[in-house]
Amino acid sequence: MKLPAMLLWLTALFLSGCASGQPKLPYDAWSIGLLAPNYMEAWVESVDVIDQRGLVFERVHGGNVAMRSPANNAGNPAWPSLERVGAGKSKGMPGIDLPEFIFVRWQSLIEPQTYNVRINIPQWVRQRMVTKEQPVCRWKSDWGKNLPSFGYSDHITIGLAPGGIAKVWLQGPCLDPVEIGRFEGKISKDGPDMGNNNGQYAYPPSPEAEAYIKKFGIPYGSW
Image (cartoon, rainbow, N blue to C red):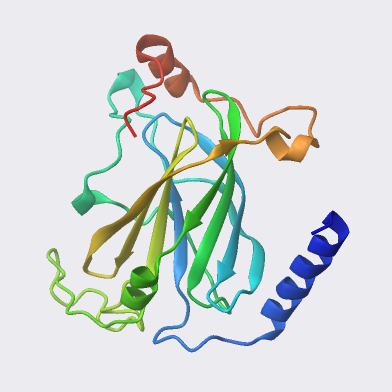
């Protein structure tokens, strides 16, 4: 497919997605959260979604991710344990049906490097997103019971790490997180900001992140 034809096709799908109305879900909207391991600071340029209807939604999320850079090298740059996976920096996806593919373009600020990754969402994930479960709120028995999504896994958390690694979890209010998978992205040949910012990254790493990397390096292969 020639580039102009592809652009027209994507534009048509995007516009039809905007005009298609609210999908039939048992809650208002599912959501996407973004996070990174401690010290592995990242900036997301874009999150794009193709939903199960084949409609394209561009730049539905981006910016900073949920991440910590504790002083004195007191943090651990590992993925959180399954029971401690947070929601990440979250944003709702109103008007978008359940996802079939999620594309993330992000800047790994501590390398620095820019990556693209395609995340395939299996059918079992979409099925689970609309299947009501029995929630167990361990810290407060009635927390979240009035939420429309209570009992549903309506949230996809995407963890982004150096080397282009993305790890993805499914979770919901008072439901145990489930790992969707680990995905390997590719280096973007265009560089940061699609080559439109003279090769400049969003911002430099924090002093805490630089101190950690200087002492311990980047733990490639651990994610």
